[in-house]
Length: 320
Image (cartoon, rainbow, N blue to C red; front, side):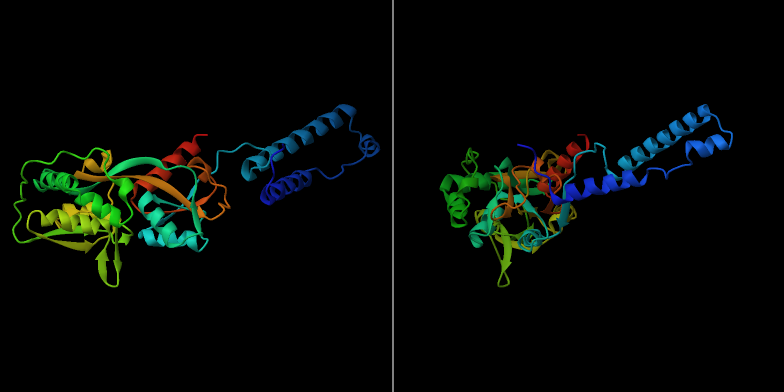
C-alpha cells in the first residue's frame, strides 16, 4: 500500500511545483528575430544552455532552502520543559503537546485519577533505581542504607508502597538488614529532606499538607532512629545544589540513581522505576516508542532523566 500523505506534505509538494514553474524564463526572442540581429546559431545554442543551467541551479537552491526535492535529516522532537511535573501533565490534558514523558509512578497515578482519558504508548522504557541522596562521604548515607534494609526486612516498605499502589516498584533484591542500626550523628531530633512536591503520588501537597509515598518512607526511616522528618519544598532542578549547600540533610524526591548524579551525591536506593509515555486516549499521534516522538511535541519536567533521554534521542535523530 502506498504511504498516506498528510495535507501538509501535499501542500508542500504543490508549493514546490509552483516555485519551480515560476523559475522558468520568459519566452525570449524568436529565432527569426535573433537571426535578424546577426547573432549566429552557435550563440543561440550557448544562450539556451546557459538559461537551462541557471534554471537548474535555481531549482537546487529552492530545494535546499525549502525542502522541495531534497532529502533532509529526520525531524526532531519538540521538547516542552516544565519546572513542575504537574504542569507537564496538564500540557497533555489541555492539548498543548502530543505526549507526556515521566516516571511510571506519576503516569499511572494520572491514568488512575482520570479513567478513560489517557493511555500508555508503547512499552515501559528502562527502569532505574531511585534513592535518597546525601552529600558525598556523609555517614548519613550509610545510615539510610541500613534503615532501608530494615524497612524491607520488616515488611514496612512493601506496606507503604502498597498503600500508594506502587508495590510493583519495590526492589527485587533488597539489601540484607544489619543486626543493629547505626544512628546518624545529627544533633537535634529532626532530619530535614529536600523534596519536589509536584510529583504525585511520590510527593505533593494536598490541603496544605505534604503527602506521598516518599513522605511516608522518609518518615518511617528516621523513626527507626527516634527522629522526626521535615520536608522542604524544593524545585527538582535545584535539589542537588540545595543539598550540597546544606539547606537540607538529604533528598527524597523520586531521584534516579544515575552515574552522572552519583558523581555529585551518594545514593541509598529504595525503589526501581521505569519511564512511560502517556498520550490521550486513542493515541491520535500514533506514538509507539521513543523514536516515534520525532516530529511530535512532548512535555517533560526539567532536569529529569526523561529530559536527558529525549535530548539523547534528538542527537540520534540529527545523525540520520
